[in-house]
Image (cartoon, rainbow, N blue to C red; front, top):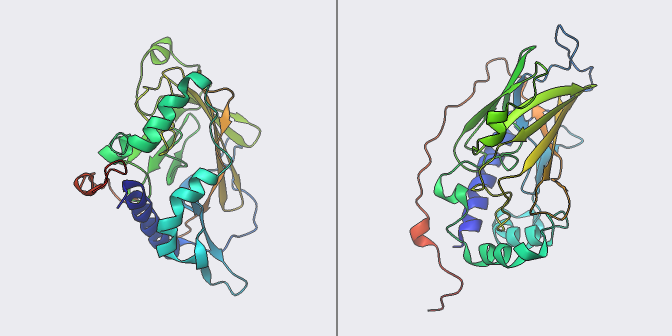
Length: 277
């Protein structure tokens, strides 16, 4: 089985399990605010859209799962995922000198995707956070490895008005270095200082050391909206990922699961499409 189908299967099953366990109908209500007047983003957030999968209550309040596949079937989703992803129009546009590299990684780089080797997904591929802890001076993001690419991660983003430190700009890491600010009710996070090892997507979408990522997060009732824009010297123009939405888990006893160890077990079973037997 192609490793991309393996990954999509694991993520889809985990996503379905969490969605059916925690998803509740949206509530029309005012956005709660902190003592300093900013929207309160704290809480556990359950992704309600992932890899083209959507879930939500129908007119009877029952949870329905919609898969972008023939007959809404999970087996067909396994088969259709790669085709649908390549047909998606929202893709990063690379400069011509990088086309050969991108195509080679897409078709031949089966084992080079970092998340398939237990490496961090990086920003923005890690997506929206699953738990947020907010204070007046900083905001903390926690990510659940069961529904994210790669191992679990966390980020601490200052909100005290500081700029990026020159040492951060010169340094590199998987998640980069982030600073945040409020623009009205929208939290804007700018991140720099990335290594060039993470990918933007499984189809060989790489980036350079000079990448800047700008995330915009706002709350609407019990729904969290997340969007990210990538600006990189390898791209013809900045690329904005599809926005993603998460639903608040209102369970007062909800807790954050610990990090699940990442162990590669599928590599030896991958069949190289260029080798015919």
